[in-house]
Length: 213
Image (cartoon, rainbow, N blue to C red; front, side):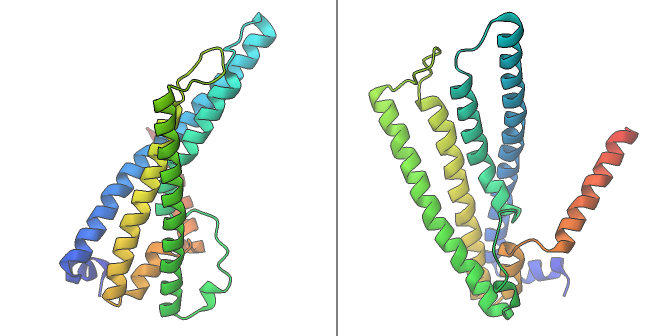
């Protein structure tokens, strides 16, 4: 049975979970693009500050603080997309040698544990944000930046990461209920060599199209 036929034959709750995951994935992809451009801007900002101090004797006086905020926010905003693309570093030597069913169950268990850790991070981030807003906290830089601004952006990324875990967990649990262990492995398992090769070929094709244009 083809992938399209299998998707059409899936129960309605599983089809809904897949559509929900794809929607969250699209939003996470947009956040990841913003995170990437954020790093580009961070590099340009640091470079400009170094050149300004060396050549003209001027500085933002808050380079360390601002670049730290940008790095932290960029990381949190890229977490959800990285998870959806199965790009996190894994140690899966033993898991990949197991039969399909226990492999799927272990992938789901790992996602549950990651969800618990992510929930703690999101709760701690929100608690820190609320505390900064309550006391109107500002940093010690010359710009006196309100801490709620970078902390809010950072906490939003953590919440998006938790949401991605939740929708993946929902789809994996429904797939488990339907006995679709291969779908769980494809959804949560580590990327294979074929996946990496396909991604590289797509990148080359996109580069050639841009060059031709």
